[in-house]
Picture: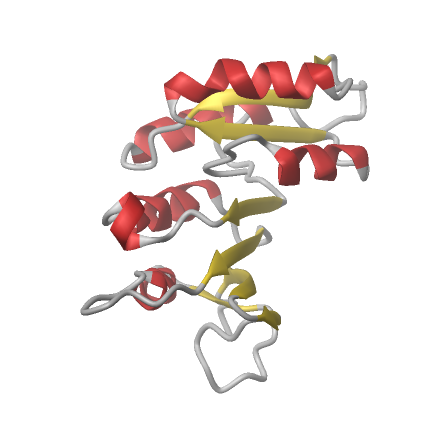
Length: 180
């Protein structure tokens, strides 16, 4: 989970059976994530012998979205090899220009660095009206399109069509464009 905040979506994934959940945030919030995971009976564990990751359970890590090398290093640390990628990347409410500025650009690069051909990316965004400006959502989705991502429902005529719209929240399911 990128920009995990309190880590609730990632911890829900762990409760639903995910073998490895990495909650990532700024350095100042990693300890809070560790405490939240522990308070919910979750934390790092030793992977089973047949497990395909180097680490199992719920781990909290710092991740600077602007540092693609750090994203790749995190992938190697947790998955055990440079040619492995996460199955699922979650991102919830991390794009809002008036509050987070243009950090969406770095977020798009981090997603690109962490995702492989089979990775699914779930992004939940809240659409907000910004007088005389933009919330940044369309630009963020455009950056993911430019990086080679498409919606899982490729029948859509839109590059990034939400799979769920419950105004003002939109949820997008993306993957890398399949080579034909």
